[in-house]
Structure formats: structure tokens, C-alpha cells
Length: 125
Image 1 (cartoon, rainbow, N blue to C red):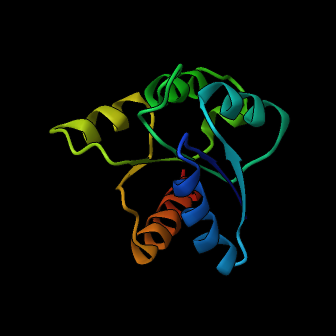
Image 2: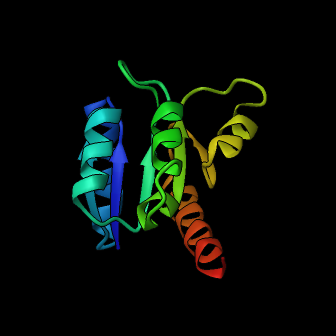
């Protein structure tokens, strides 16, 4: 499995990468939305982890760009990973095209359960 994590905080990327690497999952990193969109254009990913609050282009805008694609890359499962706990944020993310939603700090069990659930749900579509 190959995952792209779009996150501006290098420490958050490192922590999640350690979790995924321990499970033999390949993780690629993008430090912001535009870099993430270019990596999606150039590569093939099974899943995207997307932060919301990033300078320049936030995660919601990046999700919109991904979902506007007419090819298979526009259907890649997306899990939002955010520290923002605003009311109705999960619903807003799902409306924009995210598949699932995790709150930081991410716990190992929650991360793997959400990835497994999202991939399984996506395969049934």
C-alpha cells in the first residue's frame, strides 16, 4: 500500500510515517496542498491523508481539486487528519469529498482502523 500524507508540520509527518513504516506501508510526504496535488499527478497512491490547516492552500481546497478530476486519481480515498475540532467540521469534510476524518494527535489503532475501513469501503464502490 502506498499512502500520500499532505501535512505542513514535519513532526506530524514523521510520527505518522513511523507508524506506517512499522506496518510496512509506504508513505510519501507533501508539505502543502500544491505539492500534494503535483505528487498525485505524478504518482499512484492507494490513499491520501490530508491535513486541513495549511498555508497557501488548505486541505478543503486540495480535496476539491482532487475530486474535480475526471480520472481514477479523482477517486482516491481521502482521510482528513486535523487538530481542528470545530462543530460540523467532519460533515463539511465529507461534503467536500473526504471519505473519513481523524483528529490529531492520531493514535495508532485509530489510524489503522480508519485506513482499513476506508479502503474496504472504497473497494465496495
